[in-house]
Image (cartoon, rainbow, N blue to C red; front, side, top):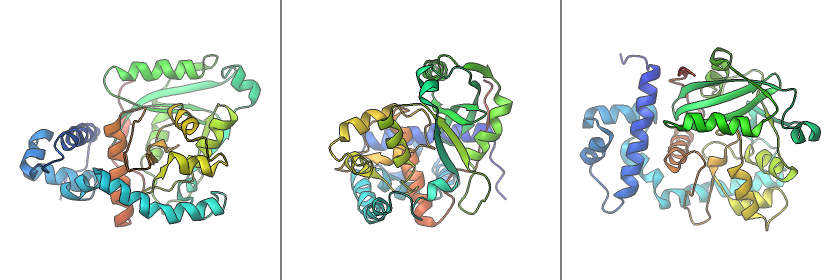
Amino acid sequence: MERRLTQRDAVSDYDRIAATIRFLDEHRTPQPRLRDVADAAGLSEFHFQRLFTRWAGISPKRFAQLLTIDGARALLRQSRSLLDAALELGLSGPSRLHDLFVTIDAVTPGEYKGGGGGLRIKFGMHESPFGSCLIGVTGRGICWLSFADGHAARDGLTELRETWPAAELVRNPRATAAIAGRVFRVRRTERGAPLRLLVGGTNFQLKVWEALIGIPPGRVATYGELAKAIGQPHAARAVGHALAANPISYLIPCHRVIRGLGVVGNYRWGTPRKQAMLAWEGAQSASGGAWAVGAGVGESGA
């Protein structure tokens, strides 16, 4: 029987996944051999195969296919009919799988203008299958989720303070650990109270973030499609700015928006991380598996 994953294993897995993605991007033609990819990940071929079975549930070859432009274009084609149906329903039909466990609320205009004065935010760093993440929670919901690599953990805390400058910030990883567990362990079959998100932004940003929640796991949309979803079909560039300002990664899934030609594009928390999320969700969706990651969540000492 394979041993249970530890927190350290999860971090190591993501680091190797990210290294693999960078290697595959740099060696698209010709496609590298399994041995070469395993070397790039710092593993033997045997252990590299086990890593992918454990982390992604698919073979390295299939994973590599999902990372290509052709793979992204195929994902766009597969998503289109579902997204069209969602648009007809006002992004509120059965296709909204994600909101089975996520709801989004906005602070009042006065709270937004006041920088979150009166809010108490507990925050902590935790390990996830996509690397270390910083989570901030209030009594009204999750208000922050960012990913960190190295010194970026400090940058994330700085951004949290800048986003909520008048709020009281309290380091309390014990309080945020349970939230981290839910974010990365929720599965389709689970029931219970949804995760509540608390955000502050302009009316336009709020519309974009709400529309993002309508994109199911394993599906993607273009900037133009998202602009159409909020009733402003010519605002694709502004949509991109709203995605860049998203304060709650993963749960408000800006990683599911790609360019029309199949190019994954930039991501606030790193393009390899975006590629890893999309490939993982695509694999899980195709296999009918879980649609949020279920291993390796815990504290990381913040």
